[in-house]
Image (cartoon, rainbow, N blue to C red; front, side):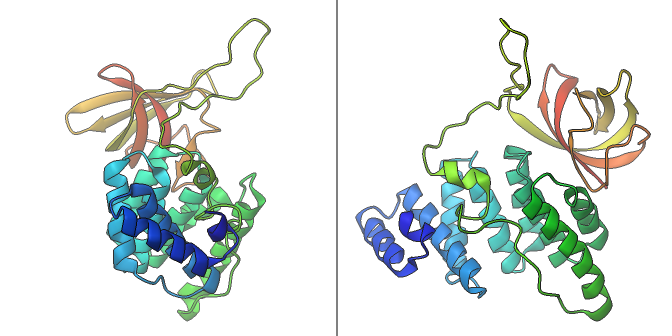
Length: 284
């Protein structure tokens, strides 16, 4: 890992090859082999070497640890490089579902939309991210918006900055730094000021579920809370957010209390058969 961080790729490759010979089924070895290929391509600006093997390794890692968001993220970027836009979208949405606050994953969703020439969907992602509190994400999102105009007009890409510091984490994401420590799922804690003697609020810890649905209506009383009524097949769900201003929204500049009859893709934690807490919302 240290050798990958220091871009000593040859030495890292030798050590990982030796480890793979000892145990070719070791999931962590297969993961770091994928990280190595990802970082080498990122560092050189060239195509990923052994792309097919990398995707096989990442699929094996996901089978072993289905809640490993970074594995889905790297698989998404590998798939888009291989030309599989739809499968790449499937993988990056899984990564976002597992780590909805990771803006790098949302940024990568926008990049995949661009690769598939889904301009409006990409524009919605980058318009949202251009005001990010992360200056690297915000700067890269603004650059992407400029590049899309250029690419649509001239058919060739502009040079643009990378969205994250590639020297800090395996795939430019904050989650990656912790991902190699232990494959344990940890509940997220909501950071807030709490009165003395009271425990800090904890986010719901149920399994995150994904649905595609029709957004029928939004009730924003009392603000900033909101309740979305959505229909998925024969089910009608009431999904709640305590603060719609901080909800992760993809495909729109901001959350709107006037939305109705919109196709949506939703990540949520169920509470009962007809209710739940929103995690993220993608509007089409």
